[in-house]
Length: 172
Image (cartoon, rainbow, N blue to C red; front, side, top):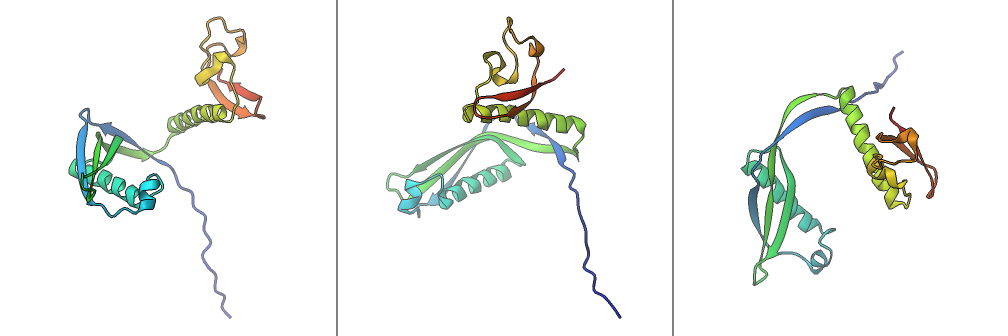
């Protein structure tokens, strides 16, 4: 008698970290496309797959042309020719290269958590949760802060309770 057993496995992925070296000089790259955009593409450029393709293609070609792994702070300008037959996508940005690939360590995770908390503070503001005036940007900035327990400490964690309150965990 035989049984078929399918492999059972669980995996865990360790985050990979890298350093990015960014050139100090801004590059400019442009790509020309035939204008085959529909009226819908022109009305909704952000959701247009054709326009998004042009931008991504130009970004990729700029990276190849400059031997870069990434283009940092890309700015994209899209213009049509006077007769509307061509579209020019112009990209400016700073080429960068990846180096020093490594497994994430405790300091990397701490940095990630800190940046997530900064985003949480911004998200709270969008939801209408206002922080005490001295705690804007997650840092007590008021020299005469009446809230002595967090005076001049960075907020470690913000937990929204409802739209009017938030609990703060302060680094010691």
